[in-house]
Image (cartoon, rainbow, N blue to C red; front, side, top):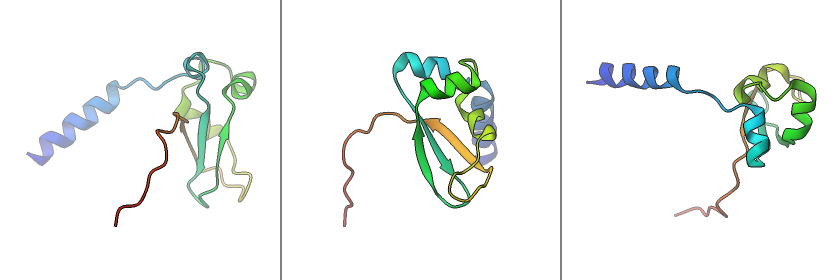
Length: 92
């Protein structure tokens, strides 16, 4: 059963179409950037990124063109900075 589930998930991932920067601008959502090396993170304005990269670039691909301003690493991940749903508290 585990092999079937793995193949199903992989198939769904191949069909998924990542959001483009233009779609994020239309939704008024910025881009969250995360350095996989040092953990530094920032939110970049979608309008600024469109000016530099164009509106047709997929959001996950933006990270391949970035460098961490803290450690200089090029291992940067990007995703939409969806609005927060409020404070999340720890449960003990």
